[in-house]
Image (cartoon, rainbow, N blue to C red; front, side):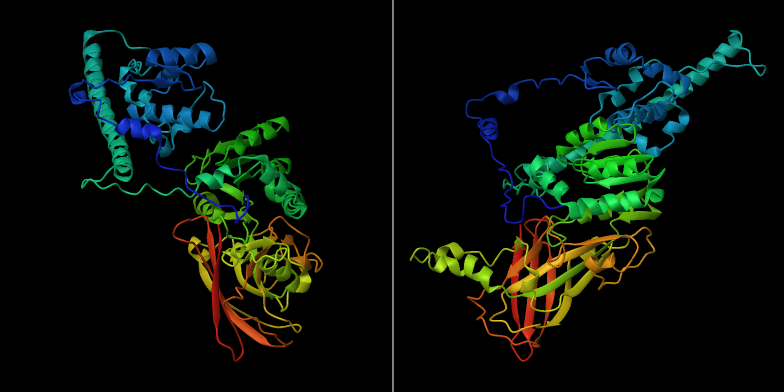
Length: 552
């Protein structure tokens, strides 16, 4: 699911601004320390919409009048104590946040999950003001079911009971307030530590943000149009889902990085009972509209945010579907998030779609490309423009290479099984080898691609040397596609690593010569979304050579 491309520069937003400068300019503010601090007014955000009120009772009355939703009636009916009331508030807010309709018939069972003790809304004034609401009163019943009479002994007993209950609730509230305040204090202190001058007066470096550009690059139509028009990619997902409707019927599906919502709608059309579509870019708003316009709003819930941060309306899912693949498979590091979602939400017998990735490397010799794009700069209308070659061998290229340029048999250097792969597996060193298929003037570089496999059972095995372009022809189960030079063109193309022949002299090579090497994938320290590809190689009897390339 690559964005604009590794050749696009990625720069972090500036941490400075004129506003910050004005705030810190104190030369005209003598005596400011004597001023009384402004007391911040408490604001109550409506339970059911974005309206803001200065009074808790006005907010609850708004919900009652506009939505016929009586918070106090539910609280009284369920006889909720302080913790129960906290759960009720957070349950309502989580349902609204997830786009679900909240009805008056909330039951005690809805509030059983302890996760509703965690505030959904940061600094939720309602939680701090629950003690301002009328007490929950339980009606005293006789054994025969009739209400007790108001004799003095019974009333005294009831008053004593209520006083004890009030003390207990007050203690619960004090504990809850202290817990939330401690959490907020920690968060505030963390922000001060990372964003303000240190105790010694030296400024600490602002926390690096590798995600903003990544997510914003998926907010626009162009990249989604490119991916949707990649019929190799989109057909594979559609065909697997539609051909295996029994796997999806009645199931709960999680779509990580849903984009326009296309995969979620495939799942809903295949009979899924519920689909949760998550994306952290603004495209989620269009996905929600697409889903509504196609009649799936009752089945698909759209959530905006990082999968690691959003609160799902379910504890576990049956299937995770995601189009997470980047250039050279791992560029942009989206698989890290998919693995996190798998470990947290997928049932033990759940299915990952796709399920397997086979990664391939091959040496290439392409004198025409070298002449047209590298040597070209040495003679441009009679002028030497070699300055334009600066950095040309430092970055990986994303190109569709002709199959004829592959000068040795491709080597399957790694397989990822998505049901078991860990984040640690994504940084690696792998050996590879091959023999030249023909004479070449020079070894010009290497290409990397991947094959995707969609298997209907987590127990299905895919050989590491299985080629996707041969999978269907062999009558194998599931769906597979390749991004390599031997298949139909995809928007992933291939990652091309050009050898810097200013440092490695080009040498004629003969058919049958053996070469071997080691390929390394690493994440650079300055950008967790980028990728560094390292390569060591040598022909028999020759000195080992090494070079690295960046995808950024």
